[in-house]
Every structure is written in structure tokens, then in C-alpha cells.
Amino acid sequence: MLLRNVIFFVIFQWWLAMDQDSHCTAERELLEAVSSITTFSTTSPSDEEQIQPKAEISCQVRKENPGKGDLQDSNASLSPNSLMTTKELQEYWRNEKRQCRQVKLLFEIPSTRIVEHHLSKYVMYKIIILQTGSFDSNKSVIERRYSDFEKLHRNLLEEFSEEMEDVTFPKKTLTGNFTEEIINERKLAFKDYLRLLYSMKYIRRSKKFIDFLTRPELQEAYGCLRGGQYTKALEILLEVIGLQERLTRGNPLSIVPTLCAIVVCHKDLENPASAFEYGEKALSCLHVHTSHRYYIPLLETMITLAYELGKDFLSFQEKLEEWKAKKDPIRVFTLKELAVREYVQ
Image (cartoon, rainbow, N blue to C red; front, side, top):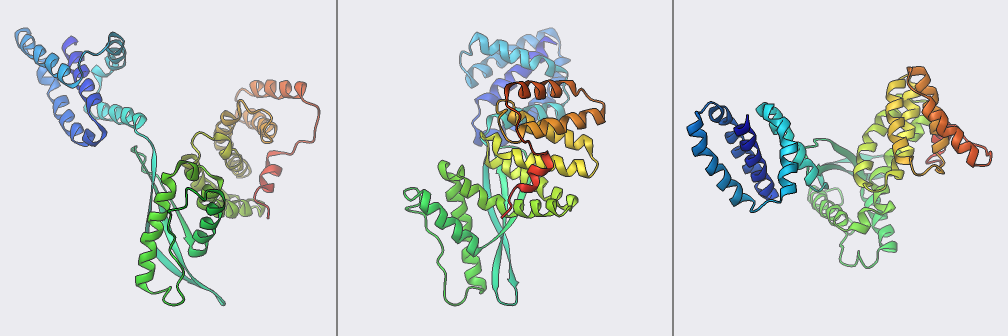
């Protein structure tokens, strides 16, 4: 058992010493090392004495003089892993790397379609937004037309004139806008354009950039919600919330309305367990923002859901009473009333 822990420790220290570009190669080598654990564990004491110095040398090469605290932390975190299977160990390392890597977004525009109405004709660009830096396979798919990009560019120029100084935007042409050549050129240009905007911290965090990527879908979803089309509204909202979370890291309040709209849809579709789950997420974003307009309506909804599900509702009730004791009585909308007021033109 002692030898096995030593081997896992050596492998883990080796992995920590690798840079991100070497992780893919390292994983293959780690699998080979893990597969040899059984052989090591069945060797005689004399064999172990010969193997152990090599392991110590390897550890020193990969990470010189680790501190005592580091050794204790590593041993504490790795000791349960001595009984892991190869598959479980792989997943463990994936989780570790997921926490270390910075989350970034990539923009791809793989295809387009031409839309024709009675008095207009335009090209819709399909934008796929992928997350890198983790093993998350989720992706978001939206469509935007040239005029949407053009409006975004104008809005950003108003607020970020210096940052946008060297950002080029594909110009309109008098003819040939629907030729394959022009469309392909714009696909590449818009891909580079989004990539460049996202690379600038203040722009990617700006409301105008986030609205460009999410607002049309949210407007459609809230329109469906107001019309009682809860299934369709929920489908759109669940697509949008993942992208919102990626775009607004560090600003949890910005996703509260969407989370609460999801709660409303699930509740009206008689899915109380799912409504409660998303309600808890919304409350976690509001735990230090009790003056937020969604806080009290959400608490009231959570009390109803908890009672229906047989869960503890007293904690929510206590928070509600605590808030009422501190605030003057005011007119408070229900959660559904708040939701239907969002994105009203």
C-alpha cells in the first residue's frame, strides 16, 4: 500500500510540473505508468528497494524541493486515490486540469443561409460558440445578420473608441452581397471580428457585447412566456443560460432574471423539482443582494415549492420575515409578474 501511494504521488507531481501544451502527451504517458502499478505492487521487498530511488529521482527532476506543506496536501488529496481504477484516476486528473485552465470562448461561423421576404433579402450567419480550457462539450448556436454586426460595431465605437481604433469591419458593397465569394469572405471576417472583440476584457464584459450574443433569443423566450408558451420559452432559456453564465463570469446578478424565468416556466409546467433546483441557483446569486427586486418574489416562490416537495421551507420563511422586519411594506410583484415584464418593448 505504501509503495502504491508513493507511485501515485510521483505521477501527480510529474503532472503538476507539465505545462498545458504538454498535458495531452502527459496523459498517454500517465496511463502507461498507471497500468504498471499492479506489477509494482506484486514485486518483492528487494524489488521495491530498487524501484523507490528511481521514483525519488524522477520526482526531484520534475519538481525540485517541494515544500513540506505541499507534500502534506498532495498526500492528503491522493491517499483516497490508491484504490481508484484507471478510469476513475483519469477522471480525477481531468477535474484537476479543468480547475487550473482558464475558460475561454471560441467563435466559429461554419455556414450561412439566405433569407428572402417580400421586400427584403439578407444573409444569416450561423455562429457556434465553444468553450475551451475544459472538457465541457456544450456549445451555443445563434444566428445573426450583417445589420446586427453593424449595429454592434456602431454601439461599441460610441463607448470604446480607443479600443476599437484598430478593429476593422467588413464594408457593405453595392452589388454581389449574395455571391458565394462575398459571403465566404464575410464569414471569415466576422469570425476574426468576434475573436478580436472577445480578446479585449472591457469589451467582452460590456452589456452591448453580451446583448449582441443573447438578447434576440431572450426577447423571443420572454415573448413565448408572456404568450403562455412555456415549453418553447423554457427550451430557449435553457439554451441561453449556459452562454450567459460563460459570458458573465464574476457578475452572477446578471443571470438572475433568466434563472427566475426558468423557475416560472418549470412551475407552470408542473415540474416543481426542476423549478426548485433553478430557484436555489438564483438565490445563491442573491445571498448578499437582498435588496434586489427578484429576492422577495423568489423567496415566496421557494416557500411554495419547498412545501409542495416536502422540503424545509422554514429557512426561506425566516429569511422572508427577517427582510420584512427591516424594510417598510411595499408593493412586491410575484415572480411571474416580474418575469413577464422583462424585455417589454
